[in-house]
Length: 316
Image 1: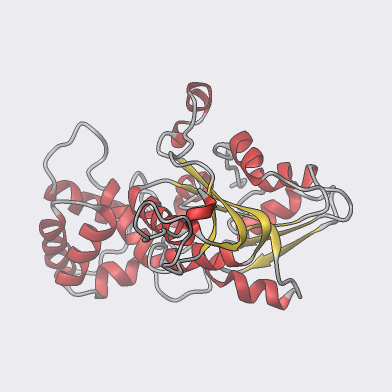
Image 2: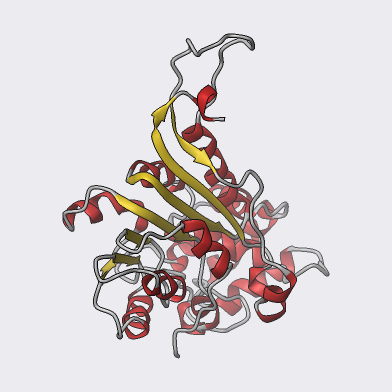
């Protein structure tokens, strides 16, 4: 299957990065290079792009999409290890970083990857095929309480305990091996809901667990901010509330907050800031984009600009 992924909030992201022609930019989730191609088009020959992805199929597609350019480097890795990746390349600071989080259209549509509940394929859900943990292990080896907790935590599914119980009952007879088997168990566990497939939240939760998408995210955001040059921008696109909360918290902590009483002419609390949140409210897709890409419905773009360490009272 051809790797296709419509880049979400493309123009808004490129504008948010405030690209410098001679700058160094990182796309930490390059996918098919939809965003990256627009970035590299704005770079001079002195500019450079680093594209990172856990998915080998994504990197193949990115290489093909960027075949007319030379000033880029693709890395099979995880954006959570962005500092180590840049250090290996001899790069200390960059002018901009993009993180387009979540699962790509290709990964959802490519049935053999096991991300979709509308299919009958092997339970997998690994973005990086090199890792051992897959959806099969989560569903068939985790304790009932652990399954219930992760479905509630990562899927915000109120029927998590009922789903976990029925998963554990079903696997006593035989392992749950396919996406269809799992989806059918979930459908029998959850009352009819007109707002979407009953397995949506559970599949999301298992995918997040398999790929460890949330736990390292706060630290990854803070690390990315620290890797920016002064004036550099971090653009992050999220697709569900768990991602967005982690990004919002990291941005707020990085921006800092002066705790001095009002009326003092200067700060004495000693709190520092790493920069400024550019958009207090997230940027969302407009009606025109939603007409051509329904998956942009839940997308939110948040932008942070790195500034010299200073007092947050003076940076308002």
